[in-house]
Length: 301
Image (cartoon, rainbow, N blue to C red):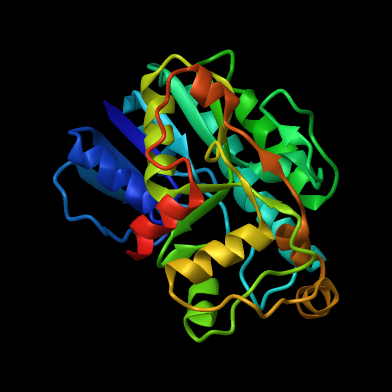
């Protein structure tokens, strides 16, 4: 399979391209910098900005599949969600998706599948409500962003199979949500945040990549929750991370302090989303890590 990947040099994209190349697929990575992180004969890196029209779009015609992961990080302290920052977050996702669909529409040989990133932010802050893919969109900036993002991808439904990856909190020891937490916890300064009863829907990095490959290979379409089957509360998450690092997890960051320091961006950490991967399980995906303790033990053991 020949796969074109936007956002391929990001956290998830880097691991995905490596996995695709290792199994023998050819990858074309669209990168603003043109940096080749893999040095693998199965990986071709081309320079291009996926939010803009350009020569990179011509490579879509030769692909069997497109994986669209482009987008700036949502939570990147000390940057706050100013109006200009929020516009940049939306444009980096929506415009890149529109450019991909444009290229698919122009291609003589259209790729058979578009696997496009989204996020569980789609569901908004829903308390303890169990959220499968059939749940409707929520309210707030992240929900509105996700709806617009997904709608841009769904414009390709008349051209190809479309899968929407509603990704949860991806666990990796050196990147993603754990990156700013691990140093604090190692110093014994970690602990839960906010009320602690808000739900966090996590997924081990290996299952994140496994589910993207599953979406490419299997006849699934529409939204797909990329979360482990057993979400946990923030209190449970903090305790488990402390135990995995052999450190106490007693210092709670109050919600008011987080909002003071982070502004509206604190919503991404204080919101509650109890998301379950109903469609992945029904389609036969077998998770490597279903329980948080086992996932953290694998990452830090």
